[in-house]
Every structure is written in structure tokens, then in C-alpha cells.
Image 1 (cartoon, one colour):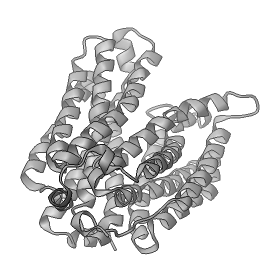
Image 2 (image 1 turned 90 degrees about the vertical axis):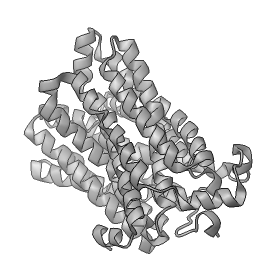
Image 3 (image 1 turned 30 degrees about the vertical axis):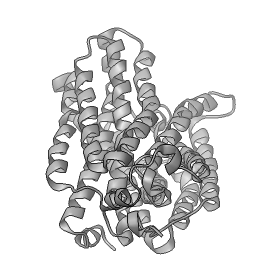
Length: 410
């Protein structure tokens, strides 16, 4: 089933819900990556070392689980739609406030608060979509939603390339406030989740302890699973720019470096949508396991291609597999989550996994500095090992493909 044919099967309101959630995750990622592009400029203006500025990335990652929990609980009690609108406004406001930071300390506080708001968006948006569309559409739409992340990364890189010399790093954060306009679209076009409304009518507002009774082992499993997923994606992305510059001798900002990054993002788009849709036919676990294990034979092209053509092919294929596995995640986590905590559990498990995996780039850099090792070898071994770990965790876990939500849950 193609993306267009799948979307045509949705009704008018469902298509608006998918689009709003896709744009939310795209713009969220866009705002996040803008900061990573201007670290040097911020350090120069505030006369500090770049390492001090990178603390902003760390603080954002630390704050994301907090936001996933806080906004998720609000979404479970008061509805997906109103809390999603509040969340989008807040991360846009904190992005804008970053532009007017008078000192590095204020800027770091803004990045922490931005991280809190950013942490809430993915879980609420994913639950709103998955509860609003037919079960047979979840796989493909899941891949489409997850492709918003590489789209946001690419748009951020493009905006930085086109505008930073004209408006400076502060101007980029002003541009990053644009997502606030998405609230107008959500308010006008996107209805509340029918599954949430049905669950509220049947069970009312349950406390966290009651809602999670009998599901704590599932929550721990999902956090471990998402830690492996984040080690998989961060391990294939975070040090790639360094690999380009140090090992491939491609200057930052060069056309060749941009082409390889573009191939990474194109592969992520193709993989997320393809494996997400395929999971509807062969099952969530099987699709994720196949994608993870197929990354292993691609590794030599990815890090040891030897020519721009082969390196570009490797960059494309590695992300087809990495983000192919990721494309199944939104629907898999939502289908496994109980109705009463679907706004909280998927997003919190995702962000906790991201926090656990936050040291991936540091670990790869440290290992590459050891005698007898280098960055291409470390990246290759890392992805191979995590691919096997991820496949094992998925194989050991449950699956609930096509389960009913709300009053229809079986």
C-alpha cells in the first residue's frame, strides 16, 4: 500500500490528525537541531569554550523524560488535543526565548525548559494519531510519523545553510518559533481522540498507580527496548559528521559532506515508511528484527566504502535499516500500552531510552581514542553489536498488532 493510497483511505479528520502530528514532530526536531548547528557561534559571542555550550544539548536530553511524564499524564487525564496544543506553544516560546538570552546561563535554562516541552510532543502526538486511525493503517502511518524526525533535521540543516550568515544564530531561534502557528491548525482541524473519549466514558480518570497496575514489567521492558533503539540511531548519526571531517577529510559545509547527510536522511525516510507499512503484513516484531539485522551487512559500505558513490550508498542503506526499525516504534509502543496511560507510557519509555543512550557519542569517541582502534571501526562494531541486542530484545518482547483501543480494546 502506497502512502497516498493509505492516506486516501482515511477520512478528512483523520488526515488532518496525521498531518498535524507529523508536522509537530518535524518542527520539534527542527527546533532541536538548530541548536546543534550554532554551537560555535554561541561560544564565540559569549566568549566561552564550545564544551560549555554543548551542555545545552545534554540539558535538553535530560529534560525530555520529565516532559514526557508531565505532559503525558495531563494528556491521559484531560485529552490529547488540548495538551498537545499547550505543549507546542511552550516549546515554541522557549525556542524564541533562547534567541534573546543575555548570557550562557540563561540560554542553558531555556534549553532545559525547551527539553521539557519537547519531551511531551512525541508521545502525545503518536497516541492521538494511533487512536484516531483504523488499525490497518497504523503501520504505514507509524513510519510516516517517525520520518518527521529526519525531515526536521534536514530542514534545520537547510535553514542554517541559507540563513545563518544573514540573520545570525539568534535569528535562527526566532525562525524556530514558527511551530506555534501549528496550534491554530490543530485547534481548527484536529478532533480529540475517539479512543480517549471512549476510555474516559468507561473508566473515568484513573490515578497512575491504578492505571499501571500489572504493567510495571512492561514499562521497564519498553525503556530497555528504547535504550537499544536510541543507541542504534545515535550510534549511526551522532559521530557521522566527525567521521566525515576526520576520516574522509571532507570539510564541514562542503558539498560532498552535505550530499552524504542528504543520503542519510533520504534513507531514513524510505526505511521508516517501508518497514512501517511492511509491519502491517508480517508483524511488528518481525519487521523490526529484519531491519535491525539487515543493517549488519551494510556496515562495510557505510564506513569503508572507499568512494563517494559507495559511501553515499552505504549512508542511504544504513539509515533505511536503522530508521526502518524505528518506523515501527510509534505503533508498536502505542499498541502495547494500556488505554489509561497511552499518553504517558510510550513517550516516557522513548525519552528514558534516549536519556540512557545519551552517552553514545562520548562512548564512541572514547573507544576510538584507544590504541589499535579508530572511529570507523568503533562505529562499525557498535552498530553490529546494538543491532543484535535490539533484535534479541524485540524477539523476547510481546506484540499487539491491530489491538483495539478504548472501548474496542480486546
